Amino acid sequence: MVAETHIFHIPALLKEVIGFIEPSKGKKYIDCTLGEGGLSQAIIQKGGSVLALEADPQMLPVAAQRLKESTVNAEYKLVQGNFSELTDIAKNEQFDSVDGIILDLGLSSRQLQFEQRGFTFQQNQPLDMRYDPEQLITAADILNELPQDELIDMLITYAEEERWAAKNIAKAIIANRPLVTTLDLIDSVEIAVGKRNSSRIHPATKVFMGLRIVVNADLQSLELALPQALDLLKPGGKLLVIGYQSLEDRIVKQFFKTETTDCICPTIQIECNCNHKASVKLIRKGVITPSLDEISQNPASRSAKLRIAEKLPGEAA
Image 1: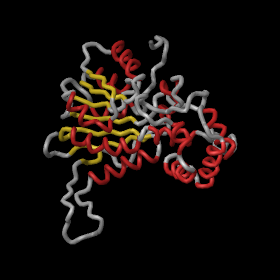
Image 2: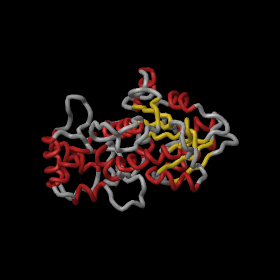
Image 3: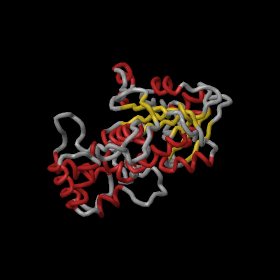
């Protein structure tokens, strides 16, 4: 049961998202990352119909209560599922031709508060980190089973640790096996690189983020979801993605670059052989970031980066 006094998570760049997609009655949208329901709520209150996906089953009742309490005669469907399966879910729910699709890739503050999930290093919890408890592999499985070289590669690639730090952390993890709780992982990181760094960010921050990405295959899911989202949009429909770290933003940037280009041949040729045609145009070049005022009111939004593309006229979804 959700406590009535709970302050719901505030979506980053909410004003900008709603301003660009311009929801209204008769338009359909897909919120690929429901979370606590803030984006879906704002769209519904403007009259739009929403299909919302959420991989974490514990978040669904949270969002359902929020939407029930704040909307009247609203049209929305909430589905547990990963956006890597976007096409199948959308077609099953008759949302296969839509006016806008949003992916907010951040972790909800509510998820950090869930006990026994292991998303945060602020509490001692089991090393789980799965969005979907039906998934087989946990963070503990990865930390306790990967050989040292693979641990190092994982920390460099997904936690974006420097090589020296990745080597030290991997050695400490192996020396402290089996790791069972988040405190076990924190201890290993602190043994490897110290308790604090010059930026005052906890040294385990990037390790937790990278491990969560690996456990849930976040980047692979994003790569699968983007082309599916594009196919589901009507001409003129908008695809909006909010990322919070460089790995996911790089994927989105590259996807938009490819889809705004007529030719993607690997080398300059007299005649194009790829037959690729631009399918979107950028609404804004580069990224949109939160204002200083938003950051002061919602510090969790400080690293948010919004990219937006509009589907070009052509064959409808």
